[in-house]
Image (cartoon, rainbow, N blue to C red; front, side):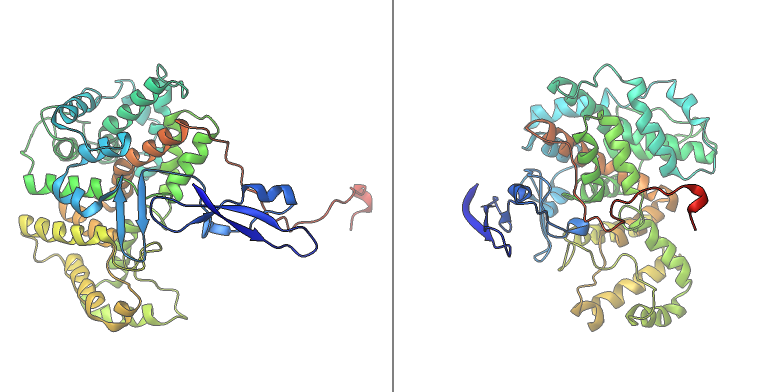
Length: 429
């Protein structure tokens, strides 16, 4: 809604009036789309001050530590909801009633299996390949198996693809893990909850089916909820950009997985464990804390602070509680790496240097500890992030396609050579 206007004064040219748009909450946005007519464009590397789209899905106030999904605080969803209910919310805009939830859960469960031929697709990968490399491949390949619903202009096809992706991602993630371990791939069980089913496919084998701990299943479900969506981050923006070209949903999600793989994005919780390995022992903490405080030292404490949240990461509070529950359930007391992590947490919560800079432990710090405690290898951390974030990606993809949109085409500030003529090879110096 444009109630106000901004005026841009450009030396030597007529002033340009730009509408100011007001959202439900958050800062006003200056609409610069008409600026191109004046022969100018904005320059904003990293999109630090640019809104690339309009969305009704997720809102973040980094200064206040607020994260809302469709208006609901993430803390309430993590405490009072479950992952599939959150999925319904993100996809449809409202929390389901009892009948709607039962129908949605049933539909998801009916799509958990993947095409049997997809198993043979894994044989093309080395067993020691990084799980994210395999995920990029197999998710992109889904369009070759489920090409009966790829008409992006058909709302029913979009719904079917969304459900298929939410339902099949745990199965694919577990298949990736089992393949890397050389173990038989486990079929999903529709009598289990979403999180229980994932843990079943990850850790059970045909010769031994163990019951799933309710505490660990709850922790896994919370990890899924807390990673379900996070507004216009790098991977979500990638999914939207790919989708703006008319690409099929499986290709778009594969693009999101590729973007998520980066250590500055989805690889952050994996980087936390790598950092703990680098520190090595509790006796080395003081040395590494000093390195982190030295602005001339490249070492960084991973899992502390957040680019968006200038206050505490609201997801971290819930994740810390879950972390304590998991460690208590598993009775882990003598793991040197976990002892090291707990000591770092204590320092970050009490040291004035960290407090003044809001370098609190974030969601990646605690999720890495939880996943390690459950027995999930570090290389699988980002795969689980991708599993959880798929519903956010597909919700943004659906939202974009449900209204008018244009193919994404960022401008650039060109600083290369101006036009010049080719000289003959013999005359070049």
